[in-house]
Image 1 (spheres, one colour):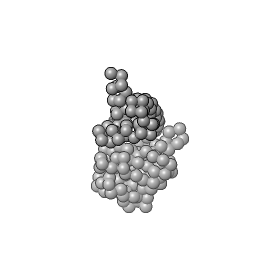
Image 2 (tube, rainbow, N blue to C red):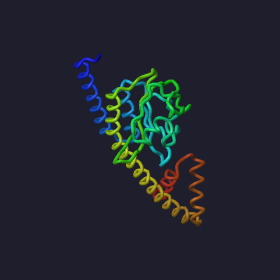
Image 3 (cartoon, one colour):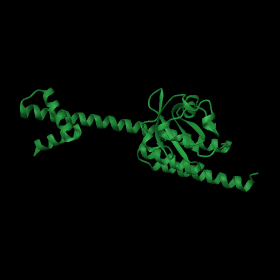
Image 4 (spheres, rainbow, N blue to C red):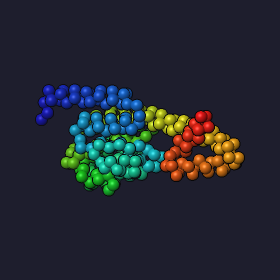
Length: 234
C-alpha cells in the first residue's frame, strides 16, 4: 500500500518534471528541438523505456516525428492511418488509450520498421490544440505495465502543455519554409536575367542552365543563383 508520504513525494516529482518540460519547451527554438526535448523529458518523468510523438501529416495519416526508444531510422517514415493502432485510435477518438500488453489489444498494429516489438505496454494520448487534434504522444515499456490513473493524468497534462507549443512550432517552420522558397525564387529570377542578357538566350534556356549547373555541382538552385549574381557584381 502506498503511504501518504510516498504519494506526496511522487506528486512533487511529477510537478518538478512538468516544470522542467515547460521550461525546456519554452527555451527551444526549433520544431526538432522541441520534439526531442518533449520525448526525452517525458520518458524520464514517467520512468518508461520509450516516448514517441506522431504528428498529423494530413487529415488521414500520423507520421513518427520523434522518439527515445524506437528505431531512429523510422523517424519521418513510420506512418499510421488516423484511427489505426493504439496511437492512431487515441488521436482519432481524442481520448487516452492504455494497454498493459499492447499486442493483445484489438486496436494494435505493429510497425516493423520501428522495432517496437521489444515493448509490451503502451499508453497513448492525443495532442489537441485549440480543439483540434494535431497528433499523439505515446510511452512504452519493455515489461507489461498497468498504467495508473495518476500516470494517465500526468501524460495528459504533458500532452496539453506540448500540443500548443508544437502547433506554433509547426506553423513557424511552415512560414520559414515559405519565406525561404520566396527568397530562392527571387534569386533564381535575378540569375536568369543575368544569363539571358549575358548569353542572349531566352528565359527557358537560362533556367535550364541554372538547373543543369545545380545538378552537376550538387548544389541547390539558390546556391547556383547566388554564385551567378555574385560573379556579375565583381
